[in-house]
Image (cartoon, rainbow, N blue to C red; front, side, top):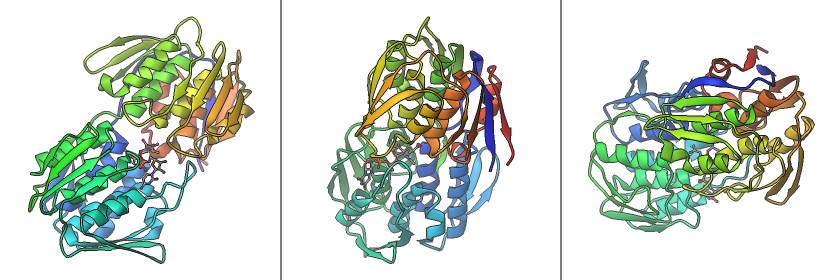
Length: 416
Ligand code: EPZ
């Protein structure tokens, strides 16, 4: 297994180019199943989860013409079974459930297991589909879904589930009649999916608010879309500049997508110049301690919790970080402590007592954003940090070591 080796202590300076948004690309690839034809997607990031999703679509009968745009041919899709060995490597495979049921009126998708950050059930996905007239049975670890037809309905989510909202939108767009989703997710990736479904011939109102209304249509046209920049990648690089006391520009980006993170980094002492499609940031004289609570969008994103914690390990006081989305998203803490961080956990709350320095050390990645956190800590630590199990990183960050080297980091990937 590859590892990433970092020699810390070098402030970052320069410009980082953002890739397309992973969590927008995944539902959009699933949406191609809604209709036959040739779909075109531009600015797809080159990530492990994207390759996994393409393998899944290929397994269902789709074919591809590589390039930018990526062309996806789905008129040959003739299967509706998604095996466990595909789902176990990527939970987001569940995103094909809604489209398959909408198009074929049946689907057999393996129940995703838990993952490092939590149990991650899909009960709201399934109850939402049942509200649309889908019969759901759980057999031998698989979801067996079938329907005579899908009929629009009123659906309320106890929790604004991101992929749950995406799944139900994709099923409802081909249902008969109107569907209203209450307490739907407001994430930009959901808004992008709604916009694409509308451009495909669907009728969706309210995306970006918690009430989304979908008027079912009888058929859709292939999608043709350019994926937006990845807001979590943008926020990760802004935090990398802060923790290394540097100054970088990140482009392209949509600044409003990272407002909550900018607000917290400003509290921590960083200064920002916000352009139309770029952000230039610079570190302050010191890193001020801050309190962070993760919430659904537009709140502070859980996908940035590990990264901001790494930065707070070097703050000039105590920070309180509360993780309100996932029940086990502190796996990075024990590894950060091996680098000299002073952190204690009480339930879903991390108390981070800032130190003057971190020491480089061999550490192990446990999940995608935890591994980003360890890379950030390594960039600021004294000495050498080796991050193992970097396949976690490769799920969500395109060419991370290349982009960081490009702004002055001493970082390399060692093939293992
Ligand atoms: C999406 O996961 C993202 N993944 C995650 O990003 C992100 O952390 C998460 O949203 C929250 O923003 C993709 O978009 C592919 P949820 P998702 O359903 O949709 C509970 C990354 O690092 N829940 O919004 O799976 C759930 O357990 C990844 O890029 C239920 O109980 O998250 C969690 O506690 C990690 N039942 C909370 O809701 C359900 O049916 C939010 O989960 C669904 C969710």
